[in-house]
Each structure stands twice: as structure tokens, then as C-alpha cells.
Image (cartoon, rainbow, N blue to C red):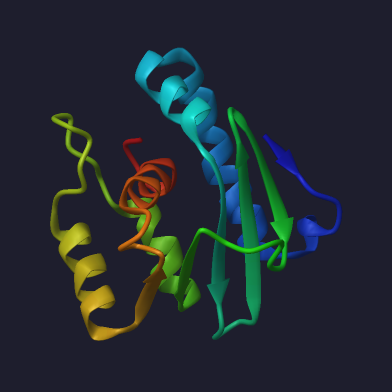
Length: 140
């Protein structure tokens, strides 16, 4: 888990780094989580236009780097208010199949339906979106 130079000035990049670092350390002890990380080779961009912050997560078969700004061509882009992006961290995952559940999931789905949170690449990369949600959620 690495924070790229210059990303420490971006609050969104710091939040993503801290959140994912906790989940990666948990996934290292969990066989399923480790296999899921090793399978990921993708670029995910999170952007909060209300505060003009953008962060990029680059997954490369087990290594994760967080960059300031948009780096490369993203496979998936999460675009929404800073509050909507950070609300993902409060979303619990079920023990069974590790799928999102609860009121926070319904709130997140409502944000997506209302257009407050846009997930570009959801139709073409649903498994990657679910894996990123697991990394950012409270029970990944």
C-alpha cells in the first residue's frame, strides 16, 4: 500500500489511503481477501467535484497505490459529493457472500438512482466495483 508523492495534500487521497490500508492489512490475514487483491489489476478514480478533489487507486496484482488526481484511463470512476464518497465507508457488508446490506446500502443505492453518485464502468466491470466497495466499506 503506497501513497504517491503529492497525494498527501489531497484529503480524499489520504482518506482513501487510510481506509484501504486498514482493509488491506485485514485482507492479508484473510485468504479470500488476499486472493481478491491479487486478482485486481485496474485503475479506479474517485472524484468529488464539490470540493475539487480527485484520487486514483491503482491495483496491480496485490500492490495498491493511491495518487493525487486522475492518472491513466480509469476502468471505474466514482463521481459524487465528498460526503457521498466517504459514506461508502459506513456501508456494512453481509457475512454471506460479502454483499452490501442495511440502511446505508439503501441510501447509497438511492444516491446512485438520484444521480448524486455516479459509478462509471459499473455495467462493464461489476466485479471490480464490488471489490472496491468491499475495500472501502466497514466490514470488508
